[in-house]
Image 1 (cartoon, rainbow, N blue to C red):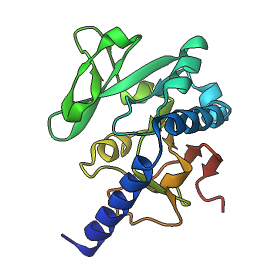
Image 2: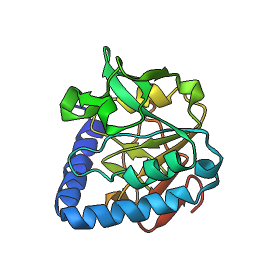
Image 3: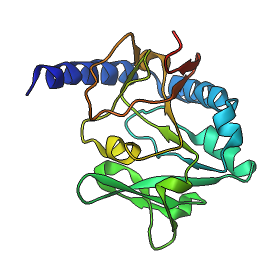
Length: 193
């Protein structure tokens, strides 16, 4: 394991501990606040389609944002893990469109959902374990989102609790940064410090 990978693992452990320290009620409240901040951005307001995710292991939940998107007539896509550590995207309309998937994550059922192409997505709302003030993102280590977002042309927004923010985290050439991060305390914009 390289020094950079070791550093990433240390940040992952710290971020997981910080998330685990939040009560379920506190996580719901912080998620709602982060979603409210993201819902006020030009990127969200102008988007016709968004990519969301099903939260796992205490992640900041985009549920309120998804509700607002659907109320505004936006289409919402979700990722499905496929071979080679890649994500396929599908539009899902309700909880009935999901099935148990990889890593214990609810995923859209391809038999019930329409396939979405990355080029159709205006705003990708992305989970992560840790983020920094330069809008770098640290995921769980498999690179699914980095592969997807490497060729993505829409806006990329991290959704996180403020406790997931660090001044700086390790990032290498394969890590795709966010355009901005929405937390319960507001919006952090890339290159605006």
